[in-house]
Image 1 (cartoon, rainbow, N blue to C red):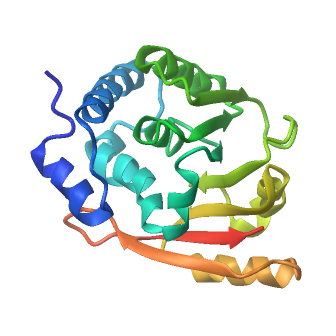
Image 2 (image 1 turned 120 degrees about the horizontal axis):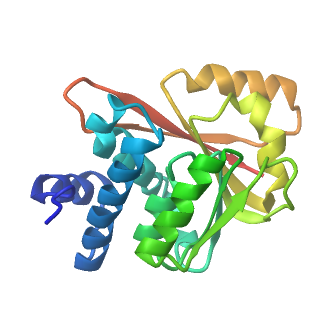
Amino acid sequence: MNNFLDKKRIEIIEKNLGLKLTAEQILTLNKWSEIFTDYNSHTNLMSKNETVNLFEKHVYDSLSIVLWGGFAKFQNGGKLMDIGTGGGFPSVILAITFPDLTVFANDSRIKKIKFIELAKQELSLTNLNILYGRAEEISPVYANITTFRAVGKIKDIFPLAKRHTIQGGKIVFYKAKDVKTEIDEALSLFKNLKTFDIVPYKLPMDVETTRNLAILNV
């Protein structure tokens, strides 16, 4: 039996993020890790060195959106658009963990999309929708939340994010510790931007790794 989410990792999620995973969600995430690892062995979703920290740097990081208090109101019936989803972070992880959240996973790289399609099928993720193509070319999704993780600078991707987010929605950027510089750049370039909220957090690693959620009100 796959033990990707062992007792220690389940406790970390519960203690640090306040998430109580069901037995079914744990089984699904364990199955997901098998599918991901197998696919990555023949088609590069991430470097082999990165898979050592698959839980800490990618799964836990994806789930850290719950540390932003505003996320709770969208969990039941909300719509989330993840642009440049890559191997499904955070789209697939959030689709598994929040079955009442409608998730759109977008990427322009076919090898990434093929994996998302496989995960959707194998894990029966009926709330996961897949959009292949460049985000600036596909029809607007009009999501409540649009997410970007490890995709460009805020000033460069804000116009793209706004295109897919409803008025009054939120854009969530997963960022490293230099987020303040990126925010200042964006505010100087787009005078009509509203206030950013910043939620700092640490990844559960031996070496201290600080990350930030930068939340922009549209």
